[in-house]
Image 1 (cartoon, rainbow, N blue to C red):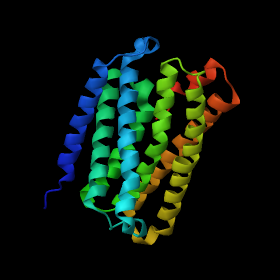
Image 2: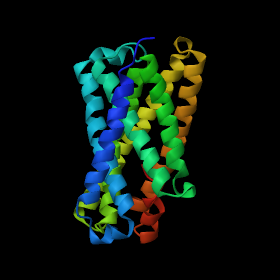
Image 3: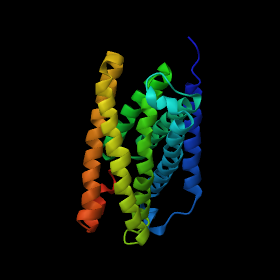
Length: 243
């Protein structure tokens, strides 16, 4: 069996995000975030991942537009590497949460990461559905604003102009890059049912169902917290739930 370089890239990515996490541990932390420095460090690392993979996902379709026409077999090494890098991050974040939080505090995200690693892992090992996985990573464009929102909240900047601007960008990109992307992916999976093996179709369908449900709940929390009420209770309601 031919060696898959994606395995090495996953390991390198895991190490890279561990280093990023340690760097943030040495940087100054706002006084208001000192009560939970682990969370500040974790969200900051997640923001780095979103910045890298969100921009990278767009570039994948820009440099290799043919991939958009065949999400199953057509892909470039550039795209394959992106998925491997993202797997490394999700494994890092999974381990970080297991070490630093109780299960009841993070079970939703642990479940989310397990689903993502399983789906992306199959894609990397089979060298198939890379295009589909890259489409999924377009949601990271919204995650940039989602993580920035948490950082601003922890820095006690929830009444600032920057926070209000970020809230609007967050909601707008949520609709475009999360809800629309997930809807398009679900439609693609249904339309291509005959071209997808049963195992891949089952894993993909379960993954899409989980992602869709979690993102609808998160959207409602965001809408309620940032636009339908301005109380601290509303902001606290989502603070530990978003990703």
